Length: 347
Ligand SMILES: CC(=O)SCCNC(=O)CCNC(=O)[C@H](O)C(C)(C)COP(=O)(O)OP(=O)(O)OC[C@H]1O[C@@H](n2cnc3c(N)ncnc32)[C@H](O)[C@@H]1OP(=O)(O)O
Ligand SMILES: N[C@@H](CCO)C(=O)O
Image 1 (spheres, rainbow, N blue to C red):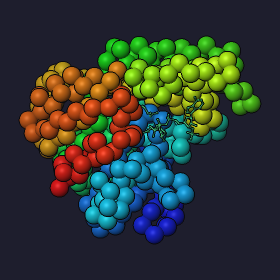
Image 2: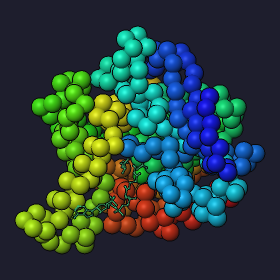
Image 3: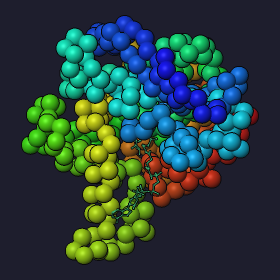
Image 4: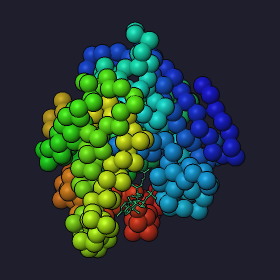
């Protein structure tokens, strides 16, 4: 285990194995990278990140993390009162075991040979990592989107470990509409002429991943947001909304591994808390701790009505709906609209 200590901000990694996957395959060794912020003696909150997120949730002054607006000293989740820990997810590409890792059987990177993983695998791996860090109890688990799927599984796989569950922009079952957009995204990646079944040459820029991100970005935002931002304006001959999508596509292509993207899309597609538990409506009756669900207006994939229905089936739950033009990405922004709900739920 390696650690860098900067005040109370720690980044490190933890390794364990062998680790058995739902598919029946085994990873001989798993490493998960993490960020931990807050007093070591304080109650621990586990954050689960979304599709292209990572463990840099709070980050540093120079490099703020993706939930820096929500979590920190005197923020909605106060890191003077809680120790907040995030792991880069199993299958991810920011240091944790995934397609960019070395396959011990071949001594080459897994790439497209990385085995299929599920949301439950992610949760089991994170639980194992917490055990290695001697963290046996969680004051709460919180996450949005892919992270929210993990929170939903946490409450059923490890009910004794966590005191509260906070699910943002996530449904108990991933919808057919969501699978449809993921199919278009993965088809774009696989149609890239340089893709080579996932064993592409490193010097190629994969346009397929850029297009996949553009598709994703359209589903993460809303028509109203685009209209108010871009208003059909052009820069040179291009619509500004088009250059925006080009920019976002290229930005992701530079920072994310396409095999990892496919691995995580497939894990999302497999998400169903009701699988082997009698269906989701039956399964969610078994949550043993309080659960907060938050939905966002204009969220195309994780529809507010299903999140509300989820809440209605859970014995001890509270539902909050956020009015926003952001749509799904509302869980990454406008914290003043919903951060107070998280704060009150934790008190
Ligand atoms: C939980 C997770 O895991 S999320 C995944 C990881 N995500 C992150 O780490 C956060 C990434 N950031 C974001 O997703 C967003 O910035 C949010 C949600 C935090 C805020 O969104 P917004 O304020 O709407 O920013 P938006 O996503 O529109 O992007 C702004 C960028 O687009 C660029 N841009 C805006 N309009 C245009 C245009 N017409 N043409 C080209 N580029 C444009 C801006 O210059 C800016 O560039 P920068 O990112 O290099 O600074
Ligand atoms: N903006 C988020 C959306 C997926 O929930 C991401 O890129 O991970």
